[in-house]
Image 1 (cartoon, rainbow, N blue to C red):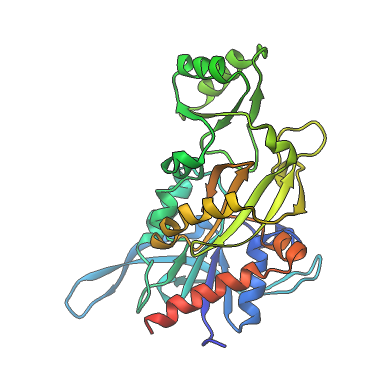
Image 2 (tube, rainbow, N blue to C red):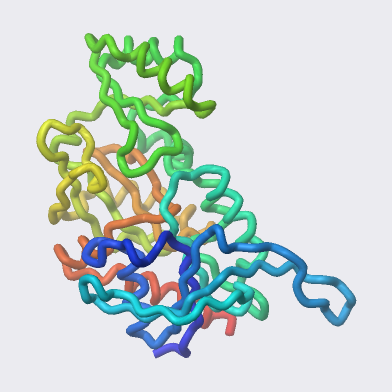
Length: 332
């Protein structure tokens, strides 16, 4: 076993997680099982200010948070035991897991800027997973556009005329907010659907953000595959199948997880994007594949670890900690 690490987890309230489905909880259980010491904090407690003065007379920037020591156990209703919160520099940690849920808004982006100050390996630094710069530069629905040969036909725009022309050409389309998550706000608009104009008016009246438009892929009826990659390598997949009459397969909106194997096309997609993920410190990534097409690359707070272990016996959390420990050991 590696030396015990101090691990800070940036997340939404731990008290409210689903202990049988939450990937952050799985990562915490695995870390604790390896002897690592856990702390949790929420984004609003982050603070950036002046820290210690170096021997050269320079004042270092310090990022601190209100850290609560915690132990976790898989016991419904009693899954976390907390110590007293103490404000500490994140530079005193060995690892920071950035695991709060989107939306990917300015608050989320600001948190990545603050974590930039501590990200690294060595004194006064902590390995932030995933690399905050590349989380910031890789929003799920935009990162995938750098691999157009893997995607279904896609349009990102504010221009209503462009959207209408895209629908006229492909006839059956998916309209989704560019920075949404969990299946929220995703609409299927068929050729004869008269709601497109009203939908666009409603969105642009409320938001300055563009929309992503994609050709509808009938293969989604057989499922939207979530493939887990660790340091650029696939470790397994689950299939999320829409329930009832809903076209969305996200588990947040009722999609059902099922066992599934990786196809040759899945492996081809992973081989194409894996080097980019590894090079840019995106250790824990979940990609979405419908049929033969890559639709999203999720780097902010991917899910699926517990379902993967339940269906295939693959310890994805263990693979992630193996990777983190190896990176820390390589420069020790």
